[in-house]
Length: 426
Image (cartoon, rainbow, N blue to C red):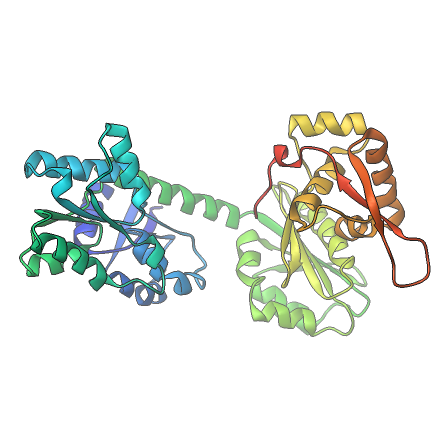
């Protein structure tokens, strides 16, 4: 089945990319043409069903930022890079015999233009360049860019304009100012379409993955109208394991489409007391069920109605619907495994401690801080800290005075290269 790519851009871009798409197997282009890049927001809000949205450049992508928040499909844009600028400049020098000093240029990011000059050994002085990255999204004014080219041409400083924006090109031509659009190399356009196709296929594959929802709390009995309604929302089948345990079997895509909605928040808040839910993904139903149980145990520690997701890669997200964070329950970084063995602590726990340090705004922490983050008892956190202190991987840096009776709490600081292991992103 062909991947349906909604392409949003000006007419000239659409013409080129539609022809090139014929060279790519199983790709269907659905064109959405605009006259001004600001129109991309309204177009995005009125897209018909497709697999992915591909914008002609950074401008329409930025102008559609609000509309993209409501998309349930991925989106990306054709990036302007040094190759695009270099090919465009070469075309003008070769075909028009105009030197770079007599050319006015508008680009998304002026650093790309500077990089091209450095690569060819050309001096940067006396070049007329304006970029519009700093204008986005609220301060963008197309007339300012047109005026930039017009004033330089009419004052005799330039002979031609090279523009990244089709509507600027149209206005310059109406003013009688020689102009050329940036040339998107065919190779770059094909690469952009292939990236869009690959991204859409990956999202589809992940969306079809087996998912399980694990719910178990005192006020839950089944049959239950609220559970049935929730199951229909995520197209799940319901299985009862015990009096207060219900499993819903569905797909990852259905969960991720629903978990950010107000309906899910209302479902959690509709129960008396605290309602916690665990979602698990897996290559098999048994894996997904086990991950869902683990996810719910994390939700149980929050002491408020919420949900967690544990993926097939042991990536933990939550609590939903608010304050969503990410942590990996496994870490196969060889240096981390080696360090964990020397400390005599599990790589998973050491990984979570490192992520704890990376997420915090301050370097110092207490055993209570670590206990809360790891969702373990205070004693378990203290045992981990002692092992790290004995190894020299944590140092005591002070004491935190309490406002109630009791001993001051020790302040600790990690003394290991936490940035060496990288910070994960959700």
